[in-house]
Length: 232
Image (cartoon, rainbow, N blue to C red; front, side, top):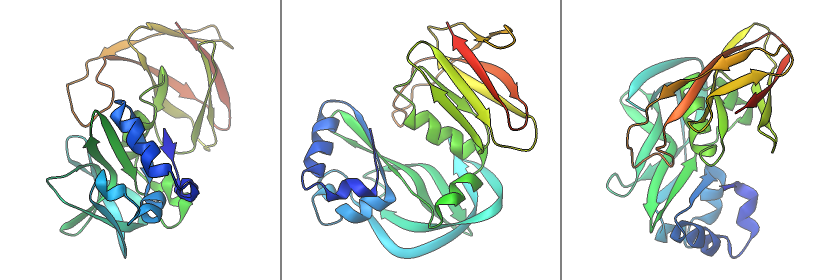
């Protein structure tokens, strides 16, 4: 479940988050909701603090801690945490300092993730593809399909094993479609082209909700167009 700042208006929201985590589920909250819930019981789950300080970042680490550089800087709220209480999944780097963009804490049998939202919401588009891919992986862990690629791409999922991928970019874009390994091919329903997948072995990682093996498929989307696909 993904909870944003508006969920803070519910007086029972912290207890509902705890119930979800105690049931072994994953909950993602935004930094805006973290700010709303400070001093209201969320500290029982994780010791994170939304500060009024800001960080202007243009470099990122993610996954295997590779340093990635983005074309444009992004202004982020600084989130403070205890290093032995929770872990950064994606970090924004400025000089010798780093701040969480995607953060994880374990509670009972579940996992709580905190997604830091830039001061200018549209700056989400300025995160590098690797950062967006990790966010998609976490947010889509309960789905059968998601994609990897740059910003400016949308995916629309349906309940009959079909999906649409639409590009709002001015150039042709290469993407990877990621599915559960129960599926072995995707078919372009417009061209009838069949794409065979390649197995992606998942390494056990306590910081990732879904450690099942995946299949990935390389596709290409033309500028300002869309494709319709079935996975099976």
